[in-house]
Length: 342
Image 1 (tube, one colour):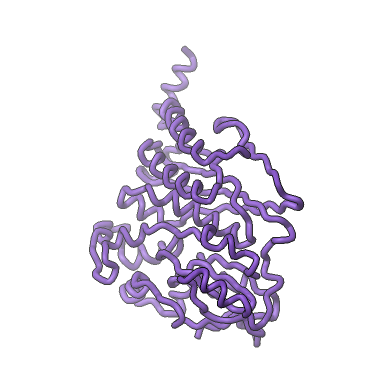
Image 2: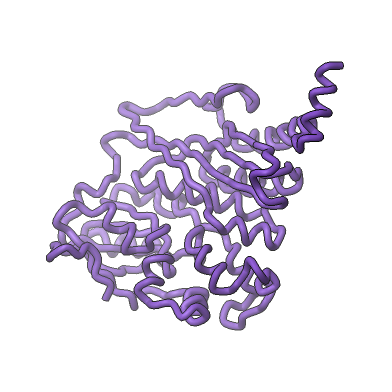
């Protein structure tokens, strides 16, 4: 009887324990689709258990990230099936820059009041993306916090752990002047620059603009902005022996991310006309009257991942990945500039 009173009191305060319990059962069912034999136990314990086997000198690689204010677009359109894909793929790409195989993933989802249909859509997208790379969703947290989040909106964070043999760790240390810089196309904005986009199109005040069809996009603005963040692990994992460095092009664009993998006294020369820039970026620049320099600092501009390899491996790598483009080369650094966008 006392437990029932506690539940009723808590429900009156805005937290429904019974609804949360039912939702956990749904999430558990979806998460199990990502389990392999390395996962010990089930969701519901206080910690996720994963058995690591088959490595001589394993190096664990971890990362935590979110999807930024792209969440605002998903909420405005009430479309939540792709945002979980965004979260998983962003995190997978981050640890893959070290050459790591994704092992397991945990999520944190918080909202004012739990909406089962929204939560299920998010987790369905997440588990779908994780299953494609053999990564297990072994736990997480679903929090109902009335008064902290606006009704109908939520926060979403992912935590991932991967592994790589110490001898195969990719950290950019072997990069030298003359190495080739190869770019792989993005699928759009991925998960960066949405605060600027929302301001340019006045989305928060008038979400109806998301339904406007732009001929250059071939679809409406909302569909373009919700295009999922691309995962590069399946494309590049077999190429790792040829790769010296990998940069995930996220917030900060190419100028902010490529230098992170370059050894001291080395810089990069990038030819901006060497790849196709999707029309969404031209549309943003035109509508917002954004300076080109700022565009490259905020957005990926059509390049979602960059790899660096020896000149002798450039042809083979680009032949095996036809969509890959040679976009520049590593050069000796002159002065303080690490990136020259030509």
